[in-house]
Amino acid sequence: MNPMDARFRTIIEPFRIKVVEPIPFTDRAERAELLEVAGYNLFNLPSRKVTIDLLTDSGTGAMSVQQWAQMFKGDEAYAGAESWHRLDRTVRDLTGFRFVLPCHQGRAAEKLLFTVLGGTGKVIPNNSHFDTTRAHVEYTGAEARDLPSRATADTQLEDPFKGNMNLEALERLLESEADRVPLVAVTITNNSAGGQPVSMANLKAVRALCDRFKKPLFLDAARFAENAFFVKQREPEYAERSVRAIAEEAFRLADGCWISAKKDGMVNIGGLLAFNDEALHEPLRNLLILNEGFPTYGGLAGRDLEGLAQGLLEVTDEDYLRYRARSVEYLGRGLEEAGVPVLKPFGGHAVYVDARRFLPRMPAHRFPAQAVSAALYLEGGIRSVEIGSLMFGRKDPQTGQEYPAPQELVRLALPRRVYTQAHVDYCIEVGAYLAAHKDEIRGLRIVQEAPILRHFTARLAPVSE
Ligand code: F0G
Image 1 (tube, rainbow, N blue to C red):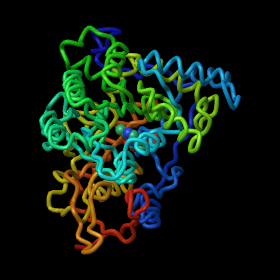
Image 2 (cartoon, protein in one colour):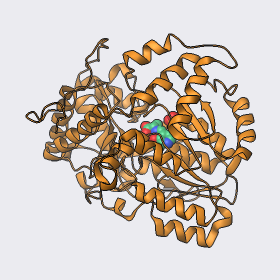
Image 3 (tube, rainbow, N blue to C red):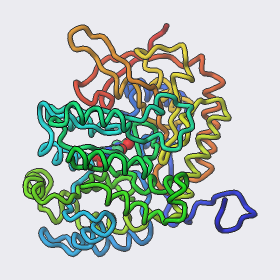
C-alpha cells in the first residue's frame, strides 16, 4: 500500500530526475554479431551496446543530491582525513563494531579476512557463499561449505526466509569438525539463493550455536538494509521496529562483518571490514596497508568515503526500500504472468529466472541459464547474469566431465534508483517474447575457460542440436 495515500496503488519512484544519461539502442542484427564477438559471454559486451543493464546491482546505482554534495567535501589527505572519521563514526554507529577498515570493494575485505582466518584444512560455513567469497576462501586452501535452508531447493516454494542458514547442518558441522571452523558466516541477503532474506530468529539461532562452540560470527552484509526491510515485513515481532533499528540489531548479533558498499552502501565503489576482536585488528590492518592503502583511506578517495558515509544513512529510508522491493516484485510478477518461470518469493535486489523450468529439455552441460541470458540480449538488448552451471558448475580437470550447479538461474538485478517503471515494462515485454519463442533458444558449449571464476572470461559458442 502506498503510505502517501491509501486510494492509490502505484508506488512511484521516491525521487525525481536531475541528471539524465542517454541509453543506447541497437538492432537485432547488430546484437547477434556482438554476441558472437563476445563469445556469448555478456561480461564481454561494451556497455554502450546494452540498452537495459541488469547485469548487477553492484556499483551501478545512482547517487543522491546529498551524496554528490558531500563528495565535494572529500578530504584527500593521505592520513587522518576528516572524511575517514565521518565514515568511521557512521559505520560504528550503524554496526556497533569497534574496528572499521575501509577497502576498495567487498572482495578486498574477503581477501584480508580469509588470508588471516582461512588456510588449508579449514572449513568456512555460510548460508551461501557468493562467487568471490567462495573463491577467496578456496584460494587460501580452505573449504567453502554452503549450508542453505532446505527451502532453497524448490524455486517455487514461498518461504518468507529462504535465505536462512540450515541450523541442523551447521550444528552437525560444529559438532563433528569444530576445530576446522575458524568462523561462521551468514550472507544477508542470500544472493546466491535468490536475494532471499535471513530472519532475525535464524540469526539469533546461529549466534547461539556460535556461542556454544565459541566461534566468531561474521555477516557478509552487502544488502543489510534490504534484509532488514524484509524482516520488518515478514517477521511479526519486528513489524513495529524501524528498518534502521533492525539493521543495527542484526549487526550487534555478530562479531564482525564485511560489506561490499557497492550495494547497500549506495556508492559506485567501496567496501568495509568491521569487527570487535582486538587480536584480529593488527594482522588485518597490516594486510590492509600492504594491499589496499593506509587505514584511513583503504584504496578509496576521500570523496568516496564521504559518498559512502552518506549512502549508509540514506539506504535505510523506508520509502526507498518499499519502492525497491516493489520494483523487484513488479518485474517478477510481470515475467511470471508472461510465461517466464521465476524464483519465488521475489528477492531484494533481483528477479531470478528459473532456466531449468523454462527450458526443461536443455541439459545442464548446454548451459540453459547462459542461453536464456544470451537470448534476452539478442532479442531485447537486456544484459543479465547467469547464476548456474557456468558460474558454479565444476569441471573435472582429468576427465573433462562437467558437474552441474544445483540450479540454473538468470539474474536480472535492478541497479538502485536507476530505471523507471517504463524500463521494467519493456523487460517484461521482452520476457513475453522469449516465452513465445523459446524453442528457438540454442544451447551453448564452452570454447575457452579460466581455472577460477570462469564465468567472467569464458568464451562459448552455440550448438546446433
Ligand atoms: N558478497 C556478496 C553477497 C556479494 O553479492 C558480492 C558481490 C560480494 C560479496 C563481493 O563484493 O563485488 O564489492 O567485491 N556481488 C556482486 C553481484 C558482484 O553482482 O552480486 P565486491
